[in-house]
Length: 218
Image 1 (cartoon, helix red, strand yellow):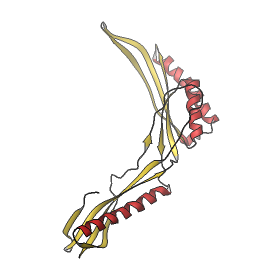
Image 2: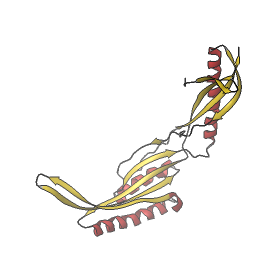
Image 3: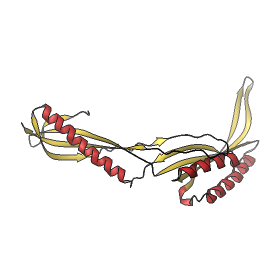
Image 4: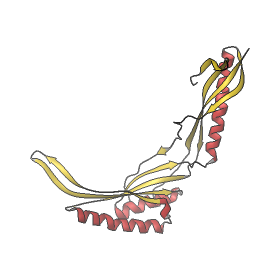
C-alpha cells in the first residue's frame, strides 16, 4: 500500500488523508516502431556513403511495396566516420564506415515479420525493435485512470478506518507530473529471409493519482 499523509491543518483545521492511487490495465498495442540500419565499410568516405545510399534507395522501394506511408517512416540519422583497430604497434585504420538509420511505424505484426526478413536478406540491414506503443487516444488509458481513482478511494477508506474516522468528501485529485505509460521493447538481429513471427501480446498501461479526502470524527 502506498504511503499516506494525515494532516490536521490542510483545510481550515479539518483532518485529511492523502493517498496515491495506482492502476495497471493490460491491452494489445496499437502500433510498433522498428529501426532499420544500413552500414558499409570502405577505404574512403565517398564509396562507403554511396554503398549505403544505393541500398537506402532499395529499402525505400521495399517500404513502398509493403504500403508503408511516407508519414510513418523517418530518417533518424546518417553518420560517416573512420574506424580504427588498436594493435601493439599502434592504431591502424580499418576504413570509413557509413551508417543510415530509418524508423518505421507499423500496425500489422505480420507485415513487421515480412519487412524484417526482406530487409535483412536484400540489404544486410540491422534491425532494432519492435517497440510496442499504446496510443494516447486508446480508451484503455481512461480505464486505467478510472481504476487509479477507485484505488485511491479504497486506500483512503482503509486509512480512515484504521484511525477510527469516517472518510469524508474529496478535496483534491492530482495526476503526478512524472506519470508515464509502460512500454515494452524488444530487439531483432539480421536473419534469413523466412518471415519472422511477431507477436505483440498485451502490455500494461499505468495510471497514478494523488487524492486528498477529508476525515470526519468517528
